[in-house]
Amino acid sequence: MTKYIGNMCCLLLLVAMVSACSTRPSVHLYAKYLTASDTSALKKAINDSGYAVTVNKLAMPTSVSANTLLYSLMLSDSQTRDIVADIAADNGFVIKAEQVMMKGNHWYNKDSVALMLFPNDFNGSIFKQDIVGDYELTGCSHAMRLSLDEDGRFTLSGAAAESLSASLQAGTWHYRQAPILELRGNEGETAYSYFEISRLSTQDEISELTFTFLTPLQAIFLPEGCKFHTAIRN
Image (cartoon, rainbow, N blue to C red):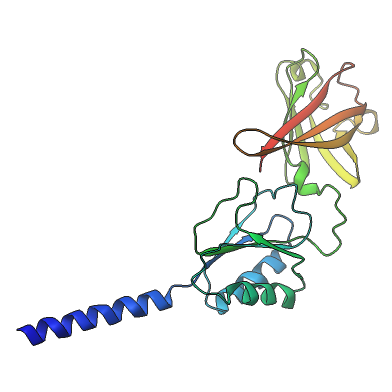
């Protein structure tokens, strides 16, 4: 009986050791600015190296402006940083900075790394993906919401929007050159409006906040002093 118990203890210890050795750090891949093909290639390469990958479309902290690898100081595999950085480089994304894992409001467990990647032609300007979202008016008493959808459509809603013609309440939005946003109402050229895009980052007791403002340059449906704004917690 004593021998049996001893053998069982050894077996359980061996299983525990194997399980511990088989657990590898997880990888968080920030793919907001990546193409579908780049995202797929990176995910496959990381998976093939034995790591679990979580892909997200989260906004990055404004302080991150180059390809960055964030890492935990308690990684179970000390080679993970080099392996993941090499995978990124092999897929055309050379890591420019490595930092300890807390950045802005981005927290992870103790056994993981994160890849924050940008397109190779990134020049620090605002991406089209950064503009998508819902905006509210500020600076005036009008109640109106502007929604910029990923498919390039826009809609205006709210009490102030209801007084506009239906062809002004919806249309397409275009971002061809920073920092100008163009809204094209369904009425045609007479319904075009233009806004200047600007951003402001601040910090509260929780985390970093990034505000995006759309200031009218020529907006036929807004009174003077009005501008749209939205905020993202990083």
